[in-house]
Structure formats: structure tokens, C-alpha cells
Picture 1 (cartoon, rainbow, N blue to C red):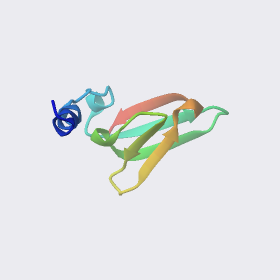
Picture 2: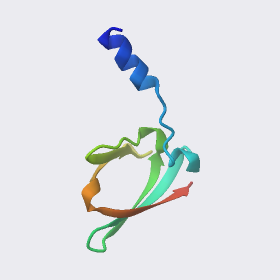
Picture 3: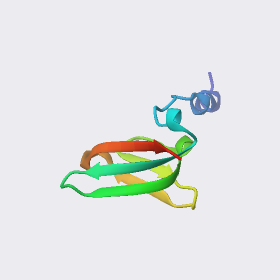
Length: 79
């Protein structure tokens, strides 16, 4: 299998994030170490990518990157 074909196959795999089960557009309340909370509305579920940083895009065009090691919990609500 060629590298290009392999990359295409990987890109097409849907890992079915549990967030997607809540809907295409969601609101998340992220609880950080130290007690801080941040609410993000209009998150497009399909854009959520996880790694050292969780990245997602909102309906208003904003891209958010969050360092996972600073997160205690995430609440997810359907919009």
C-alpha cells in the first residue's frame, strides 16, 4: 500500500467520538486544575482532535487548543 493510499484510509476512519453522540454542535464546560472553568459554545463535534492538546473549532470561526494535562473534567451539552 502506498503512503498516499494509507493516509487517505486513515483520514476516512471515523473513531466515533462520544462527543459526537451529543450532536453536531455542542457546548462544553471545561474544568481546569486549580478550579478555573471555561464554557465554549458552538463547538463543531467533527472538528475535535485529541493529542497532547485537544483542538476544536467553533461556529464563529475560533479554533481552541487546550493542554490536556491541565483538565480535570469536561461537561458536554447538546445545542
